[in-house]
Amino acid sequence: MAINLGFLLVISSLLLSLSTADWNILNQKKGKYGLQITLKNYCESWRMNVELHNIRDFEVVPEECVEYIGKYMTSTQYKVDSERTIDECTVYLSTSCGLKKDGADAWIFDIDDTLLSTVPYYKKNGYGMLIRDYYKTTLEVWGKYKNLEKGRKLNTTSLEEWMKQGKAPALEHSLRLFNQLKGLGVQIILVSSRKECLRSATIDNLVDVGYHGWKSLILRDENDENKDIQKYKADVRKQLANNGYRIWGILGDQWSSIDGLPTPKRSFKLPNPLYYVA
Image (tube, rainbow, N blue to C red; front, side, top):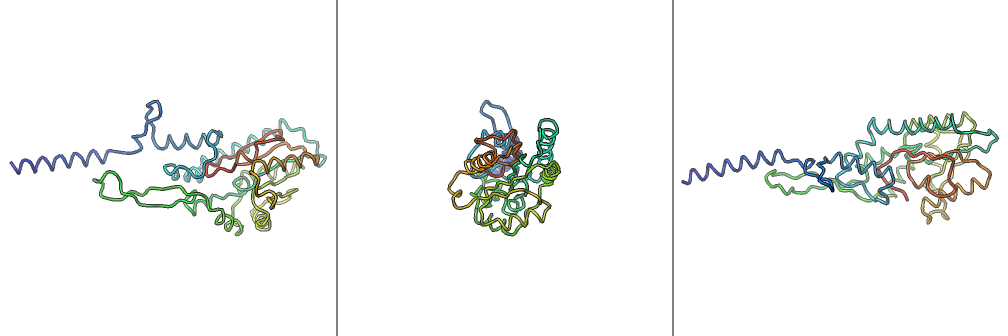
């Protein structure tokens, strides 16, 4: 009797192990209406809704999507999405811009993740300042710890120290548009949420990777640092318009770069689900 009981326990344990091996969290997620979805579906939907501005004011990428977002930002798809944005800018310039070529035609660029990429910084820090911790899984039969990723708020001081090094690479698609606009005689105005203390490092970085010939570089001074970024950039556009500039377009990676009055003729947004700037 004891032998039979032992045999049954061994068989039960084996079946449980096989069942556990087939269990996958990616297959357990269900949508609100019972739709079976994978983690990839969930994270792609989150990314898309960030771009559509349905998801706002997030401080970190959801921990379950950190790996996915990191892969996207270094993927061919990210490059294709960005190139398509620039292609649309080019179509707009060739079909809908009646440039006067009198020195008042202007185009505004953001800098971070528009002209220069901060992806190397985020990659070095685990995309969104990850802390990697080890947690025991609820499935004790695994007999090991599962590596989970948890989002942590951005360390602004650390990011600014990285910016001071002036090592951010150019986004080649944006450099192409920059040079096209320059060739058309459009006044290029750079409006960034970077602080004034980063001016020298920013100029050196831009020039080193191929950007030169802009009209103005506008950074936040002490009077701007308490403003929301969206209001700060809208106030800059208002001043530029008051100075007689016709702002034909804006290229940025954050909605705060293009929202608010006065509006340009057209605005174009590059993809960036890594962070949100209000």
